[in-house]
Structure formats: C-alpha cells, structure tokens
Length: 428
Image: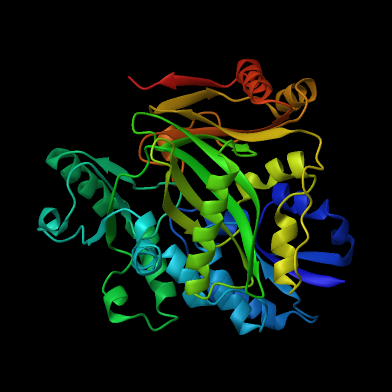
C-alpha cells in the first residue's frame, strides 16, 4: 500500500480519489483537513508548515506522496514539503514563477511577450499610488497573491482607484503576511524581492473574449494537455464566474496554439513533474489569445466534469505524478457528453433566511439525474460573512451537472434553482 498524505482533505474530494481503481493500492492520510487550512480569516502557514513536517517525520511508515488540490497556501507549500522528503514535485522557484503574479508576468514578458497585457507593480500603502500606475484607465488592480478574484477591482477612474486602494489596504494582509513567510524559503532576485505580498499588480484589460482553461501536466520534461474547459462569466464587469463547462467550444486550432504557448513558457521556467491549469482569453475577431494566469495544481472544480465526460476525475493525474508515474488519462468514456460546474451567485449582500435540509438536497439530486449540490451558506448568516469572495458577488452554492447538450445542462440548473428552498432577505 502506498501512503498518500492529503494536505487540506475534504470528504467530497477524498471520495473522488477513492473511486479510482488504483486507489485499492493507496492508503490516504489526512495531513490536514480542509477546515484547518481554508475556513479561518487568516492562513496560519508557519504552524501548517512546521506541523506538517513534524507529522510526516513522526509517521512510522513510508511517506510515498504528498498531494493537494487546493490553491494558496496548499499549492505554494507542497513543493517545500515534497523537497524536504525527496518526493516528486515541481521546484519551489518554478511554482513561485507561476503563483507570484508580478514575477510570473516578468517571466512571461521575457518568453511570450505577445500574449500578455501591459502591467506594472503598485505599492498600495504609498501615497503616490496613482503616479506608480503606468496604464491608462480602465485596468484591473489585484494583489500579487490572492485567490478567486479576491480584492480584484476593475478601475475606470480616479474615484474607483481610491476606493479599491482603501479596500485593499484593509484586507490584503490575509494573503500578504502568509505569502511573505513562504517567500523566505528561497532567494528571490532583487527586482522580485522588492515586490512582496503587500504589493499589487495593475494589468491592462484582456477579458473581452472567450475564456478557456487548459488542464494538463508536465512529466519528465514532456507536457500533456488532457482537457480544455470554458469559463463563462457574469456580473457588471464580467469578473464573476457563472459556470465552467466541459468540453470547451473553442476551435481546436486555437486550443493547439494555447498548448504551444503554454509549453514555451513552462519549459522556460523549468516547471516539471507536476499538474497545472492555465487560463486564456480568445478574441474571436482578431484570433488572438491572451494568457491570464497559471495555477500549479489540478482544478478540483473541474474534477466532477472530467469524471462525467471522460470517466475519471483528474485526481488520477495528481496522484500519478506525486508517485513519480506518467499519468494515463481516459478520453470521453464518461456517462455524459457535457458537464458543468454552476456557481450560484447573488450580487448584493443579504441575510440567509432558509437553507434546504440535507434530505431536501438529496431529493433534488435524485430527481434531477447527474446533479451534485454543495451549499456554502447557513441559516441566519449574512453573505458578507463568506470568506474570499470576489469583489462583486457572493457564491452561495455550487451545482455540478452532467448532460448530453449545453441546453440540457442549463435546463437542469434552472430546475435545481427552482426546486431548492433557499431563501435570501435583501438588506434594508
């Protein structure tokens, strides 16, 4: 049996991993549970790192793999832990060259400049923040480290810039402080070391086209992309994810170009022996692609989509790589031709007056085939109490759906929304 330690384990993803045929040879250990990593207002990264090292060193058996499917701080800490125990992983520096938004753009400008927007670093705590910005309005302003578009703002004028800076100053610490602790584990180039977690990056607008995410991996220097997923957005600025849908509707030649650009970049930074997902925009009129960002992990949001369409969740890729094996992922062997993750959102704060019981949720999923529902709210809470939301909406539930057409997915989602007794009371 292979001893596999899961950093940030939750029952939903553990069940997907246990469903794999190869899992009969695995013994999964919860290095940390999800709530220990992600549900607080801050990330206790020092305690997590030191505790993880101690637990792994004190384990009486063999540590065969350490895995995680969560974003920061898990994705950033995994290469440090794997390095300590001589396990397969991308290097910490290669991971930072993807996850540190400013450093990543610098590396991208060196290798693939034609596919990235203009950008500049911004210190939000200096009075001259407006003079630091070399871009014309409008632009996006976001921390160099955050997740789920947290503290990301569309800035169209001086007034919106002032409001964004004020909000960032109040809340950036929750990512900046733990990120800075992890940056101490490597020697950064001077021009990168000066831009720590308390900084932001301003970027020109590239989000006018169709968004697509490639899921893939690099093993022994060879890149493989095994799926492309459309990201459909909503909201005033088109910044809030509405759903992820698989397979992508973007033409194959465009996907092939995205793969080629991805390979150029990841090869240049020495990223190897790890999974990734990378986000692009495609402008149909000009047939141009823009690279948005790179994540150094599988997307757990995509896992049920791959299972529904291809037959297995992409956890297979994560586990194989962590054990030093080349993944062999199936293609179109699932129950459905299409699958989506719907993010049920509202765009104004409210009080949750009614949530469905577990029995009511199960009744809906039994009636509407191919659906799974995850609620993010509880009765009596305000939506503004939810952690790490984007700047313009609140995600109140997640609905995974499989179907044989896009129309069927949309109809099933509408049925789920109408059937679930979830009630919100707008604030006065």
